[in-house]
Image (cartoon, rainbow, N blue to C red; front, top):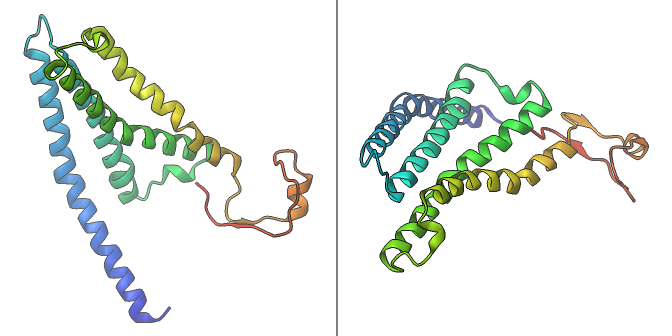
Length: 195
């Protein structure tokens, strides 16, 4: 790589880090504050008899808070302090990536639940009985998390199986290992960074 290419890469990296810094100190905290305000508003409206919409919007705000905290903590704050939790252990790396996938996906599915509930109340005139009960809606909010936990388990298992980092794999070592199910291997694999 020549000097001009390296210079461009350094400039782009510097600009990206600067944008991430300003984004993390302005936009994300505003989002966190506004989600807390949203929870407060929907929790106080109809305090004695909360509506289904209130429950769902509180659930969405909680999932959004998790997603924003995930973003500011793992994507902006810790990397800017040169703290890379992913490098401490394979288990921590796998767990954090699994957690981050679940947290990032969950607000979208809560939005689908909100849309289904609104459709049920407006178009179907509350014909879907499951969505009428506030208890069922709360259970569905927790089920979203549990379903995403199970669905994303494949991602965690994939990285659990491959735990070799920054090394060239010797075929003989793999054949002798009980941790790998290999039938016919005729090449050497170089793994640079798995997790």
